[in-house]
Length: 288
Ligand SMILES: NC(=O)c1ccc[n+]([C@@H]2O[C@H](COP(=O)([O-])OP(=O)(O)OC[C@H]3O[C@@H](n4cnc5c(N)ncnc54)[C@H](OP(=O)(O)O)[C@@H]3O)[C@@H](O)[C@H]2O)c1
Image 1 (cartoon, rainbow, N blue to C red):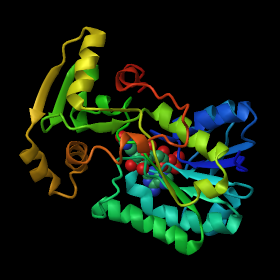
Image 2 (image 1 turned 30 degrees about the vertical axis):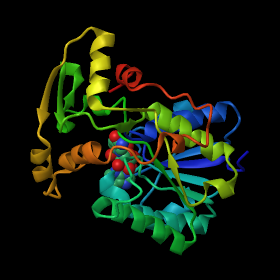
Image 3 (image 1 turned 30 degrees about the horizontal axis):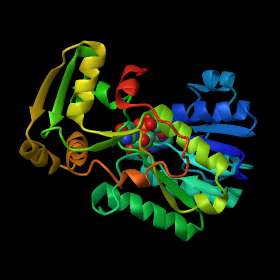
Image 4 (image 1 turned 120 degrees about the vertical axis):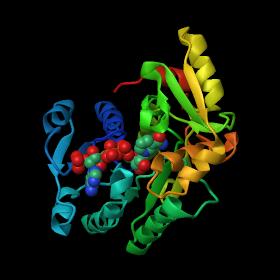
């Protein structure tokens, strides 16, 4: 059993809100003592506090503001979006001063073991910077959010309107995980594993390993709904991905060429009873 009992979640956004909900369940079960949510504004304060999480407004440019917010916290779970990754370094420095024991860096994507270019290189550099500060880190790879991706028109998927555009042939294998399962896994390992099994670790989570073609075919069969499926050629996706500002093309190419991050045997190893949901169950559970 981990000795970690108090958690700070940074940001209550697309993923963070799921992690907060899961930690609140752990609090009800008395496996967690305290959860604070760090935010730049108090917009969602009422709803979060009604659920049992304390909300603290933080100025991420002020070390003293961050240090004060993190007093008594064991684990920081950062869920900031890709545009805000750099602020995790000063936050981790403040966390170190406040006595935090573990900092979960915001990755939650399709990290690969081999790639060190672009965004991958930046994320690796963040781990090194935390090591220089003396702050143990953990990261989670989970692939695309299975319950979310298929409702993102900017990524080609608009199942709400029965449409899907697949980059490439759609028969490459991809690891998908729903946000609920990512949150369950993060909460499980941080409250159950011994600290030495958490520090400076890359955790590999996988809900289901399948292809886009197979996932959409299963969806059609389950729902009896015929989708309007189109394809963008891999060449065109590669061309678009040369533009560093085209994040959608970067992700589409990643799914097609680097959709997994290890063998099936290497997934979910720290929680044998994990039992994640399938991609189609996740798609059908989507909450906007
Ligand atoms: N695998 C996938 O399919 C997938 C999909 C989406 C995201 N992700 C990854 O999941 C992680 C979380 O992403 P997300 O989409 O959940 O994040 P998000 O909703 O865009 O942002 C999360 C929170 O970060 C906080 N924040 C703090 N400083 C910020 C700043 N300078 N600028 C903007 N926001 C700031 C905001 O909270 P306050 O406003 O309350 O401060 C915001 O609600 C990221 O690492 C992302 O790459 C993966």
